[in-house]
Image (cartoon, rainbow, N blue to C red):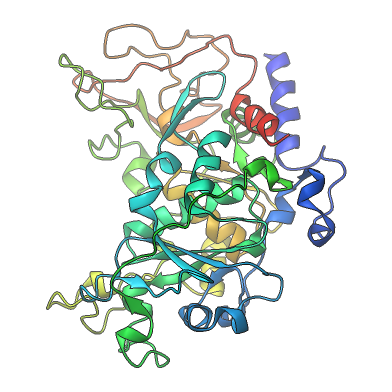
Length: 461
């Protein structure tokens, strides 16, 4: 056990940047992508605090007013450090009216891509093995990202990537997951942004004085992706894999061997270990006698010491005043889905016990909800953050329990067990009538859980 502890400590210090050399967070403009020189980023260099007035932001969280200015005159209003084009990656239709579904575009300087239609599946659903087990919703590998960049035709070294949620709600999660994916593969904070709130609400004439009519900002159809892109993630001269926290990193924090602040983005029931058939499920549907039933994790609860900051508390979801989506009802679907202001977000974390300077480790069930917390922490509050990508679909299966076939999942003394008081709290084992999923891709004797990060670092090089 002593050997494992040392490995965890070393890996954790690498994650927080304590062992990184040759880092210069202020030297972005001096790097030449053509030289194929990779700068290893630290967590602090990837965090960027928002202005109190988000209308002043040119990356990170940007206002609908900024988006309006960009779209209507990109050449005049683009950020000073951006010389390329604007790629609006829109996550579903704005849905105000059929002829006004997508942010307008000229397909020369401004492209609006229906991202969920063209490119989303591989970005959000890769299955990869971290050395000890499969992660069913892992951050994508380099070849997958290269394919996405090629399909889009975007050059992250020159272009601006703007992620827009059509109607808020669940697509806010897709927006932050896409932002995390791009950031992980080296897209710098200056070249990527998320528009605050839903396009349906924030760019509607009833809510935005700059918009006189829907035709000022919306058109019926999205752009056809220009495609034929030649930029690879290998051409992005930054290694930002540090934002992916592995299971052993989080085990070190949970056990007190490494400092850090763990954030649980899930619901209260999940956090307290209640068995909830909707929330307790694993990703795969390969269980049961028929082999196609829903699978479940071995136990419920939360990672030891984790503070619960549910992702829904980060947004304004009850500020609707008019029927902006045109369904004849004024309800939560008409809310802005904007982020709460900086001071209120900061207070959420202070109230949860966060102290400035701590590295945050958010997780949820699949790391999708945790991506919203990560965006707030890194791009709004400017806190150093590493996301536990395995989240509960991994953590909740690393147990001394029986799987759906009656086989023991991990031995009592296995070093990767998480169903022990050193690593978990509110431990509640799922009942026999649920299909507890076996640990797919298990290597119980693994020396490390860093395989994905190591593979991606090698691909960048």
